[in-house]
Image (tube, rainbow, N blue to C red; front, side, top):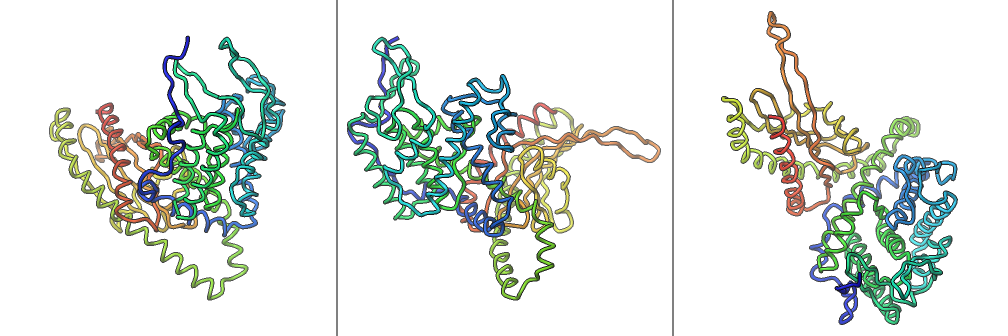
Length: 498
């Protein structure tokens, strides 16, 4: 079928365009906290094997997932985790776990990981991003890929030799569902790439935040599509470079993120960069939560070492000042608790009315923790952290909760628990919600005792993470949409458990 529509991703009238509007409005209030906490953690873990192991596994994950996104190969999920843990060994790829020859897949993985390692070295050497480096990166990523797919004059898909380390010489306009997507033509690629890097450098000099820089650079690069093939792999490496240079994590977009990733790029095509910025921010948050577990693994060993080495007066002063700064997050937590208490009180009456249609005399009320009750729900918090959201729940420095309690023929409670992430305390807190139902059986009528059965239901795919150096108003503006999404899920679960 011939294409009936041409959709320009690159605008031939204007070429790529700079940031539209105030970049500060696009930036995420989370990123400064993630950056500060990760920088402190890296300093504490300097020269530790656990830190280098974490970085190595992160590079392996990036190498695997960037190729899966480009449909270079398929790898089973279980095998993917083994490759991340043990390294790229061909014997791990047994028959049926990938759709391509295993030696070929292993070589691609090694090329992609070496390219990302080169990005880390590039940042360490404080080099400027240039077109020649981007070409070097392309050649490194595609070192062992010698052909790519193209359409012949009859519209048939054929394998053609792959041009490595240089701009494309033929148009690369893919056709999907009768739509031709047009990128920058070959004759204008060189000048557009020069403009891209000039505009990027201006953003760096004006202090545009890293996640906005990375999202803008990623999208504008894809509009140009300067290479014959491998553009996705190259641009994810470049976006990783921008993030790592600013003290953040490389951009790991997993196969499960593909849908959100493509939707965010399509939104950027229409002029809205915010979904891509928010996606990149969420991925940084995911990596931060993983990284917090490193310190916990070393905690006992470091405690002993501290006792052995001792702490001089200056070290104590610095630690005290740092802890004082980190504890600024407690005030932000209180603002979130106030917000939750107010919002839950507004819906309690409606929930109570619905429950009374099921069981007369049903009641609904809101509770908030105090010094005598803040330790409640520890078992549920740990279970949600370990089995559903995947982080270390630290309740030693701060713990609180706000709950919506429902009483009818059953007992239900929606709990928003707030506490620290990782150990030691790093100035970040998380709000992790859960829904719990309790049913009671009369098991000992003589003593009036009743046996309860509890069902714990997670109601958020990820907790809400916030940091000591965030602005309160921006924080609440970020928190409220997340809160409302949780309430939607809770109401649906409640309807199914009446």
